[in-house]
Image 1 (tube, rainbow, N blue to C red):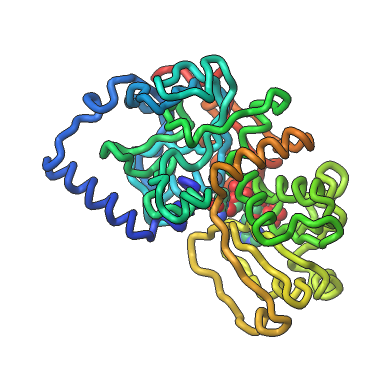
Image 2 (cartoon, protein in one colour):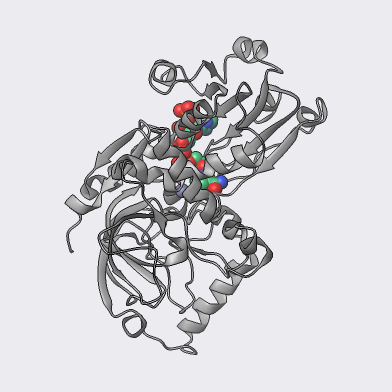
Length: 391
Ligand code: NAP
Ligand code: ZN
């Protein structure tokens, strides 16, 4: 997966990852001695994880100057995705420290390169999980930069100049214009930030798999950052939406505030039995180990379950849960840039934003602890503009 994070769950085992490791080793061996200060003359600061404890602390680093095709952005808000947590704690075995996570970035343009026509200083923009790709392979040509073998993620990725990418838990970022998302005027910056990963990760597969059709029945497993926006997109598409959660704790909110039509507790055998064979599609956002067979049984014949959650360890797949009823199990990794802009515009038009808890950066480690326990309604967003100060 490319979500720096999440799609780094695709990415962490890809050949590209070993390329990165090799390049890092070469840098380390002195074969390619570009000092970060030479390549990146601009001072930046943020918070970084320094080891697999995942504990974050202030970190000074540097970024490149604005290139001809670059947009430089002062960061105002950054969402905290569970992928940031997986990656900071090296749960996907791909971490390179120090690591500045964050790929739900919203800010204001402060400088543009000479080739940049579509963005102007002062405009509000977003950056999601991808900051570069080859732009010429089969996937890029079909607007699937998210599946480009040479994808460069917003953080924890080796950039084209041989330095590491650093994410949005920081004061500023320099990004190639192709990967910058225009933020509509009426979309709130803080509540809109999580759409840049959580939003596109659920929107894209719903579209790709024909699960955006009025009257169809969608199951959303896991009511966290991704899950709660999946409910909102499902309802905006005119679908019937059922949440499948681990406890009753979120039931009232799911129905009354988020607009879900029904709520199931996955451990309640009676409820699960009664809902068998009723769903056209399921989007599974669970971040940890869980049983997928009982979920597959909720699908109608030929129903599809799309896996977007990326647990640390492999899941068990009792194959009869798919064979019976000819069901499909699919995976999906964020979405392309065109789809991300389309999703943001759709969200602005339909008043879809994330439900957030806005935090100062000083609360970051506590927020990570709470995210581990699914104790957030429903996305932490860091108020970078008002709370991040130089170390
Ligand atoms: P999150 O806010 O922590 O939500 C995950 C939800 O999963 C929790 O709120 C909880 O919902 C449920 N859950 C947690 N532990 C569980 C368990 N042991 N058994 C069953 N359900 C459990 O995380 P998120 O930011 O939405 O991300 C979810 C997952 O998607 C993460 O693994 C993340 O890395 C991945 N991701 C993938 C992509 C992609 O491109 N594929 C993009 C972004 C994120 P309830 O309280 O309702 O049970
Ligand atoms: Zn993410």
